[in-house]
Length: 168
Image 1 (cartoon, helix red, strand yellow):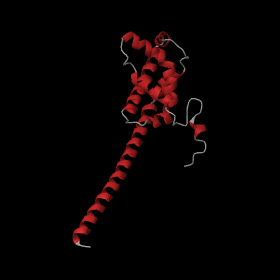
Image 2: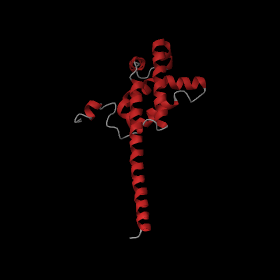
Image 3: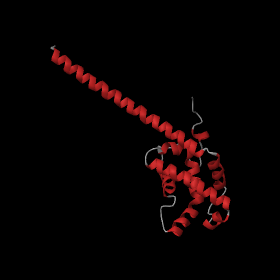
Image 4: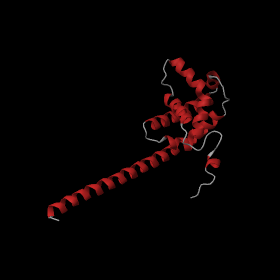
């Protein structure tokens, strides 16, 4: 083998190794980004303010009208607080900043329950303002979670059942 052939083989191997390590690094970066997004999701949903607001929203009776929700300042404030947080999560999922599977595993129940409780209020606000923009990403996220079938948990089966056999 002459020096030119050896140089060509070395160049080809260098390119192949470079591409391989580039792909590994891109995969690691994507995994790191997803972990950071998951942590930020946990932070957004675990603040005392959000948790207090969610507990209020959770107690709204199914089918409550917009005027019932608006008649109690604490309930109205809780509805707005929960809606704003979930709105941000919905947009983050749409922009692929936070993977849908993370929201599905961690918060699908609270998103679905919140949408069920707050839908009449949100639809009333859209009608009142003449804009479909009110909590549009909240609704979008709730609808995506309804269609998403990869998750092991849902409103009937919680993580304690779905992951009962999990091992560290």
